[in-house]
Length: 123
Image 1 (cartoon, rainbow, N blue to C red):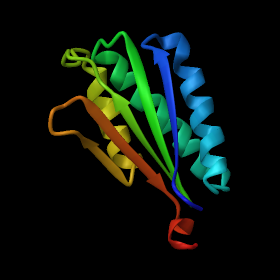
Image 2 (image 1 turned 90 degrees about the horizontal axis):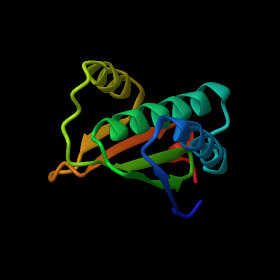
Image 3 (image 1 turned 90 degrees about the vertical axis):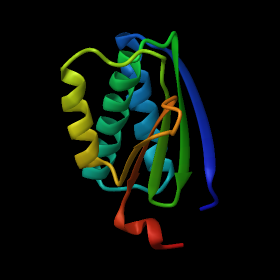
């Protein structure tokens, strides 16, 4: 599969978390992620990434999805505020455990998450 890009922009409000989750789920399937458990992991990663992004107080959150065979990368735009809620630490722990890549851009404006399956090396 050639690399594909999808951009989603939603208001930074909890009521839009489902739209992000469901988009991530559909895109995971489009990227060839077939197991129920892996798709559920992608949904959870998308949800937690959105929660983290919202905690940085942006007006909107852009999620840039990059799809490759067997993998989904998500880049969440972040606001300028440092998350104040202690529960954000739990989000960081969950994301570190679920993601193959979990990083922030050098300028702190983007949260990068990647979930890949064992099939990602097959072409």
